[in-house]
Length: 195
Image 1: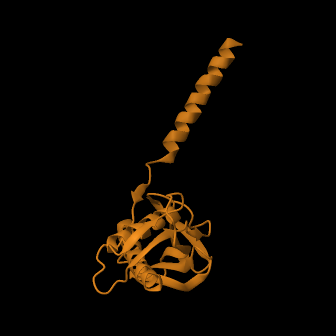
Image 2 (image 1 turned 180 degrees about the vertical axis):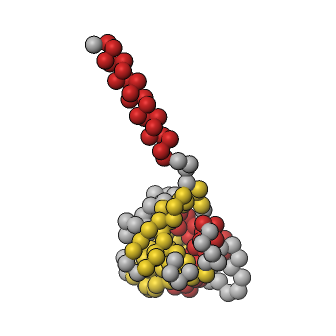
């Protein structure tokens, strides 16, 4: 009996070791950046703003980077991932962008204990590289809501696009970052003009 258990344990070790070898190298991890330069006219507010957790379809609610080879097919960029799930990463960069304006009393996320005046409710509609057109595309549906009475003050779909200069991973990520920055810049300016 003992011999059979020992052989079983050794076989299990080999199987586990084989699984580790098959996985390959870990994916490269990429980050997004928040707009820093808000030159020109940017509104300001003494209000406190909550950036709600963005919603999205499940294909976007992950660390994986989305490619769309045609309108009905979604794939992922092989060997690459975001630093966090996309909705959380985008929420963090939006908060950072509001802070970078220097024109907001306070901005934060749920659970930080802010006495909220307004909420920015977001739904990520697109965040992908359209490989057929060579464009990185970001589209966000946004609602500014008065937190005290639940009234929606304004809604808008905000987007950004950037050309992808090749098929390289780094070029695709750079284009997604540029499209994201363009959308976030518009989002910040629009929100501050509404509160």
